[in-house]
Image (tube, rainbow, N blue to C red; front, side, top):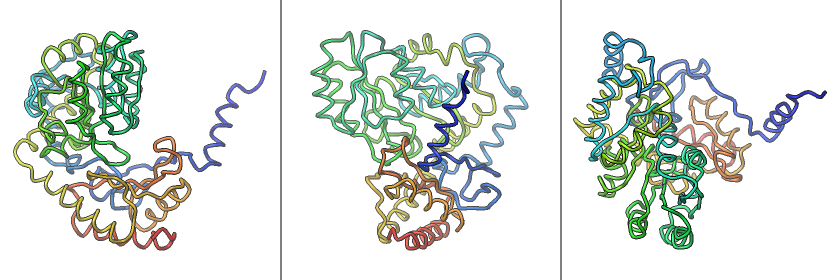
Length: 392
């Protein structure tokens, strides 16, 4: 018999040869504007800590107090013995924050899509999905075993054409789009997509992972477009702008009740810890009190974008604090990232399959935690490396 693991060795060798092998850096400190990464103190342009809450004293205090009162974990799934008063309170507060009737808190944003999609559609149904939707949406659709019809990126006209062509052949339809697309930083035309879906009686769902805490004065893309309470399902995450962990499924009471009864991550996976849940509540408190952090995030974003454009970098189609620095080939992107790290900047290269072949980039994540001095250092370093590698 041959070596049954040989296919793994060959694939790993191919990944290394094509410079697609992912070398995982190790964090040596809390997520903040500056971090220790692989033993080196560097300016952090890599995490999704948009509002700087991941290391915020109020969130840490809330987590510590929750552990003292509630213990380390619930040790059960939500539907048996894992629903604590903290979960119920967070769901109430998140629904209020998002301007909807109800919400369900689950283990992660990825889990939220896997939890919400299969109860809504099955073999007899069709999903209309934006071409650049996140992997968690794609996987959720595959689990549902519904027909998946892809419409062109941010294209309401193509969505309508696909609905006209396919919907008559199925029991019901579901339109799903990311709110903010994580690789390019562009925003879905949510109002126009909603109009098309409603016209044909198609269920509507938006994944607002990169919009919550960022758009709509921090309340997300649905608020940004004035559509609060209208989308059938809003998916969110508490692991980015909120700085903690967990996902949220929000919408009308009947929709959330229905998903709660059928969502497999809710039925078969243990509930989130008291520390995480309490820290999420503390983050909601901060966002409800003031838009100061959101305002600072956007001020930093505009400052950095302006500086990068003046230097001559291609920052793609971004409309948000996500700033892709387009470089093309993955080898160049990885070399650029390595030289940035040598100079004190942590900004990872992204290539295929995360982004299409030939569209490799450095993705810069702006945050409210950065000072203007941090951003100036970042711009100067990008200029130095860009000139060294003859990118600018």
